Image (cartoon, rainbow, N blue to C red):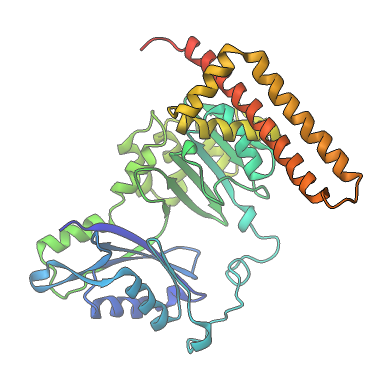
Length: 402
């Protein structure tokens, strides 16, 4: 039977204070787990356990062998009910039932308010972040548009490094598009140093230097097989591989060493292991301004038309083999002037219809506005598509033969 590591988070104002009760709970249910207690986050406890392909949690059976037990959702619901926690477990999220709460938790609590993060503290947007992304340079204006403000970027070979100072919004708050992956982020938040990895091949992972890990075997006498699995569960090997996948110059052994290093050395060693310039470690530590990092430049958010062109280009990349797309490419190639003229005429018709609808009170006004908008958007989309075709042909001509 195949067992996969599943990560989770337990959230409550005083989650970390329940360490003894959590150890007793998982031991009583014979569930081998690794609990993680973060240095400055008493409101959360990390959780690692094994589950099979059917979504059943591994339990320590006879002879300390792993056997399937509760479903992940049932376990998450039981923890939420037993402790009054909000539980995130893999893809499952269970919130504490506020109508039947005898745990004395403050449901109006906002993390960042009673967790030592008052007004003016470095919480939320007060985080200093270094983001290493594989996003092509011509897509960075679209990333800036998604963030909602200009971003500071440093080229790093095939990667781009986005520097976010406290007070600005960092990329990834709403996730990343596939074209940006793999992504690694180094974060400094109120003295806590963390690394976050987003990849296609590994589940998103967050590691914080200085975290205390507690292994709960789930049985009083774990055998050699269970001990080996527990060691693997507590290991950062998978996380190190995910982080190292972010750059071609990464040194996997160096990444492992950085994760095991003392907190104050973690950023410096991680930047070095990823093959990045040492000035970037100075930035994320707060000793160098983003503007003073060699090669740093500001990327402005893409305008609406450029954003549409970027989005359309990404979409067409995924469907470029479809016959309809091939037909459009052939038409634009053979009659470029006619193709653009038709689109411009369509856009002009849309603008004219919108103008006429704005000056009338007749019943067709609403339909005229809708039709005008559709014509205009369709025309812009066609023009962006033709521009993408032209750019792709230019890139194919300039690309050296393999």
